[in-house]
Image 1 (cartoon, rainbow, N blue to C red):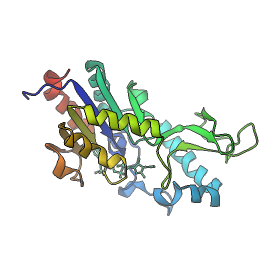
Image 2 (image 1 turned 120 degrees about the vertical axis):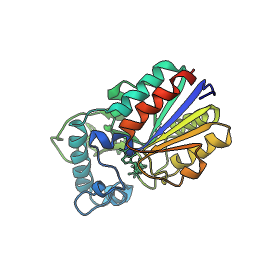
Image 3 (image 1 turned 60 degrees about the horizontal axis):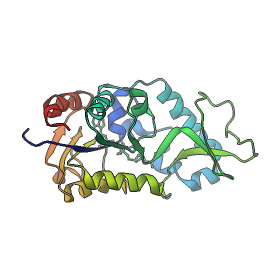
Length: 237
Ligand code: OAD
């Protein structure tokens, strides 16, 4: 590849953690009991039935705790190490990028290992698996909620601004394992492309983003991303 990339942005979704055995949202394994993420990850669902919502999160936390980062997560650590202007934007809340060693991360949808007081909004880290009490309670007496973005809620303005800044200036954007249907994350690659970036998508299947991409690599991220890195290394930073 003749181009040189001094500035890189990456957008990841649930598919990058699929080979770590974290279920994706829209795949056949994305179901939990008879519910779908869209029916549980909402403020209304939490208001109606906080115990049910917390049981779902407790189940996911237990599952994620037993998972390890895979070769795709580790490849992004190598890229970050190699490139001064590198931003990893993730929709995932599983924390596997951090566990792999990535540090320049924008967690657009929050983190499943953080909780937020429903009265005071203070956030705290919590790694208890399983949770000793459902719903977990703040010391102020109010219930805690997962510090994640639910359907119908706005993203943290600082995080989405950081993501926009990264995609507007990047010369290369990689999009890995996202169905590219949830906004505003889904529009980030198009912004990068409009700003002149070279766009590469890695996914098991084509997505609404594929027509925008300069390259669409169909295959599992844990195989394809290390292979792609082997090819891109020389063009990096
Ligand atoms: P989805 O479950 O919608 O999509 C996962 C994508 O990963 C699909 O396009 C799959 O084809 C692809 N995929 C699956 N296994 C893969 C593999 N081994 N290698 C590469 N690709 C693979 O997940 P997201 O796009 O992340 O939001 O979903 C976006 C948001 O919707 C989530 O962050 C969450 C969800 O509801 C909130 O919770 C706010």
